[in-house]
Length: 185
Image (cartoon, rainbow, N blue to C red; front, top):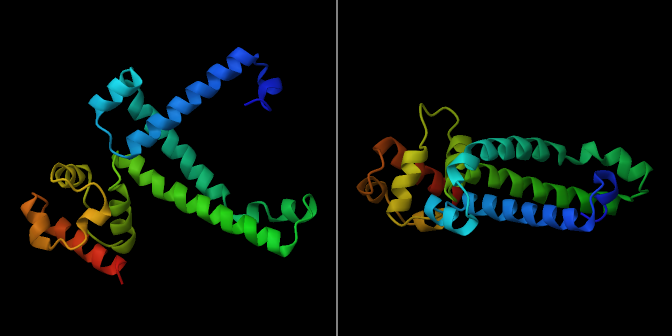
């Protein structure tokens, strides 16, 4: 924030306040992506979570989508070669770093969308079965979480029957089991 202070014309106190606000926002978004309950969020952050969550989540998802698209090396290749005089090894290092950031960003998006670490499961099912008539959604995630399943690791070894016993519809249980089987190959 110090380097941006001249362009924003912030004094030290204003810059410090902005840093604290951004840190709180970052922590809030992380907790939101981990499926932290509204009650815990209200207690932890002391503001009306529902009023902020919807608009903020949509805005952040939109920004993350754009950010993820900019992380392609071709967007920076000319600059790295001409302005930074980067050699092929350095360009490759930047490419690997951008790919990692892209994967992390792409992985965060469904977690924020569904307010759960199981968002990754839904994204994976949609990618693996693009022609399915319907996909599991928020209600399926709720049922899984109510049964103590917090991440995909908790689903390993579960059968279609196990998942249906939780209250998940058969068609979604089939997709979940099929996706996990393909993923472990």
